[in-house]
Length: 424
Ligand code: RM4
Ligand code: MN
Ligand code: MN
Image (cartoon, rainbow, N blue to C red; front, top):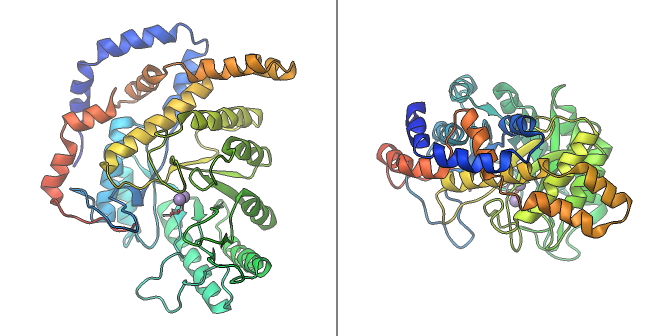
């Protein structure tokens, strides 16, 4: 289905007066108003193909209704999200969950909805039906060279799909590791991973990047071969300039200072980008900003400061992507909430009085530094984010608009109630 612009305009009509009143309330206090709006309008976050259906847990999966049953329908859903929020203009594919059989047609469909393809993700954490050797005991780190070769070949195949679609990055997350002490020789496992990655690196087209994700546990529970940002950074440094570290917010042990990790990776030009989500305990893959929006703001504080110091383009010089799983909410509603939370954190970080913060830091005025940060964090920037959306043709309130226009109900009519999304 397509959402016609006039329907969104009609929805906006009843909200416009209230919106303008709220916007006037904050606009006058923002010196850099137009500049900030331009940055917000340019800022997009990619939607992963695996987040459009219901995820489920190892205990079960409770399907939603009207879920996409094909890659085409997933692209259609991202098109709907983008029509509503004008901030989700790309999709990130997981291969082989979403193999584009006809890349020309798939690319044309995405382009017709104003979308392009973000990073492609390989998958060597599951065995596929037609696969010769098993990944039960690892993939790129495996003790058996033949398994490593199979995993390398898969990654190279993923690059080929991505290249045909116009992607510019390969994102690798490995389940490789060990569940019991003694199971693996840590050094050999790391060296095998490094050798395998360097073969994949050599297959990257000239303008491509490889993003290396880390995660401390799960599905292995004793060690993970790329367990933290240091290990990912080591690999990315050994590989060369096209390799960098991808930060998935859920891939840290509790209370890790993620903003500090981000600041240092950025300093070293080794920050690839993000998989945004939120968590209370582990890799919970919850809606961005639902548990700890202040942490998200502190991350964006480091990002904006660090990117500005390096003269980077906020919208395009890093990879911005959601990596979430939906068990109880409508995936489209959840993704709209996640994108909104990211844009709010970004907008708040653009409001930080950088000069005052630097002065406070320089004079060890700790209380003032906190005041400066929290003055920005406690500003209700929702009208600003809505204004950026409105100016680009989106909905003032995307979630409300989605409900009022009965989008899910229309999808159920077309797709049926019990469709099952591929992937997780
Ligand atoms: C992993 C990791 C990867 C994602 C898979 C589905 O935990 O976050 O990025 O591709 O889940
Ligand atoms: Mn991830
Ligand atoms: Mn994850």
